[in-house]
Image 1 (cartoon, rainbow, N blue to C red):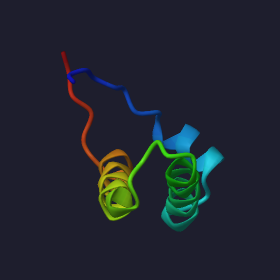
Image 2: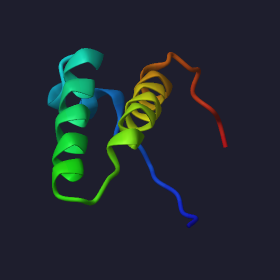
Image 3: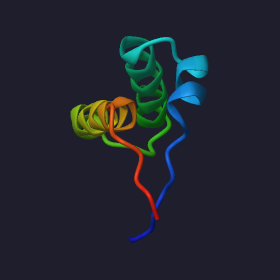
Length: 68
């Protein structure tokens, strides 16, 4: 599969999830529900959490604005 996504802004994310721990707790809960429903393998849970952690770090990183 290929595709793209556009992450929410830092401000939007911080309104939804107060911090990284809260975000990862919600990700973990949703992923465990997917396992229980048969849509995700339990062995894939660590990978889901790792990718989610990296995405949080990417969106929250201080980067200078790019000009176009």
